Length: 300
Image 1 (cartoon, rainbow, N blue to C red):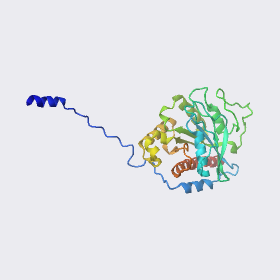
Image 2: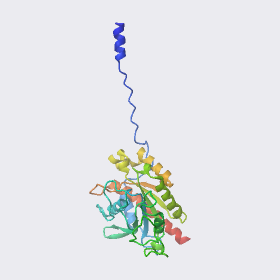
Image 3: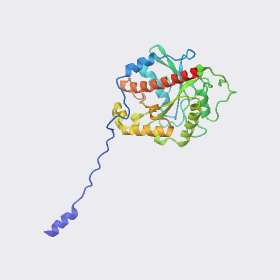
Image 4: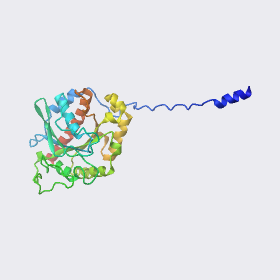
């Protein structure tokens, strides 16, 4: 009997205690957010007017890594005000595209119905890590200060010079951009090449010296976090999105208060309130920062 008991003991299988799955959600939101403010934000932006009589349209330059969703963000802003899906800024949908689809500097006026709103997004060629690839840092800096005319075709190998016909030597106040928006994909932030970060730092240094505000729109939150993919309202309780925000802040060198997570319109065929309100909140902060800069210029 003793031997049969010892045999059965030898054959007894000990299963390890399963490790509990960590909760992907925080107990409290890492940013307070009012999901019911869509109409108030939309009305505020529709009634916005520039603080300067010399500047009818506030220009906002949009920069970012190839494939981060710059043009999609501009389209998404337009979608919110049109109440339907639009595609004015052309987007490259080819999988794995490694080069910028946007080749020329182009301004996009946002419309609400038939009314043009007083802010213009300037879309530029995407940034790439390699020295001779993507838009050149000098071109982006010159574009912010209004030296680059619309229609300029970006040259990956050399920046625009003052001798070029697309160069404006003495730009008016209305030619300048009053805010630089970096569009960064949440699902790619951890893999951003250090050489690309170095390019962003060059741009940041040059325009920070002149007081140009800078904000980040962090796109593709749904692709970075399954929790948010299922329910966009989990964006501010998602541990993964908070980690992406912290990483983005550390890499780019901007405070969390200057980073806005959004979902661009991509596969949707109709607009949705929760997507809209995140985009509107980001836009409100972009426009307010740009107008504050304009006020500072006038009072200096």
